[in-house]
Length: 334
Image (cartoon, rainbow, N blue to C red; front, top):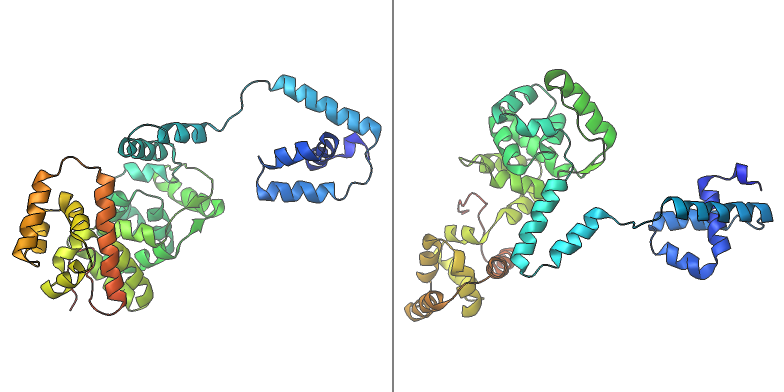
């Protein structure tokens, strides 16, 4: 073994052996499982370290310590921890969302600044898989607008493909960017991105106008009813309870205590409140009205948690076959 023949991984293995088991264990805590696996497998191949190699490796360590003296940290992690330590969960959550959005790397960034109709015109002649990849990289509101401008016969296929996407490799993104670069001069990130999936589809469809989402889901349902069922479940919100018939709503309300219901109605629309009150006893409705009038400021997160708990009850009843929920568009299913 000579120092000149050592790879970077070999040097790391030699250094850890020289530092000893206790120090190595602490270093392993800072490494990923993959990195630990690589270096330990290399360590396992070493049965002798010449004295000159040992001295050179340790000397390199000392030189590195002098060269890189100072404070090392992951800036993004530090910022996130500092934000989450703020007093006031609602403010901290809002600031954290802004921070993540501001630091998020998005491929095909130029498209986000183009008019939806222009983007749709650019993509209309592309393969649906290419279109789905492009829309998956965009913010949901922009993706929804672009989708609404695509040819009608293309929309369902594109949405279906978005739901099937999990990750996009750098090579795929690069090929799309290179192809579109000839049209609009796009140059974007070449890092691997988490895009697509059912959650992305739900966000896009929830931003659609004029019941286009219902038409798209009907088209997809012909090929993949299970996917459409999952999408519809995720699209259902507390306000969508307003679209249920009285019998179904009463069935849900029987499973909800008054305190939960009162909190959930705090931010509900007047129409939603009246629909709930109309499907319970007059005495119970009056009590909840009084409690709402007397209720002071509450955290939005608490209200949303109560609303979500009621939505889960509704979904549970649907799974038991006791009622049928509508889609995010608010249409009743009969």
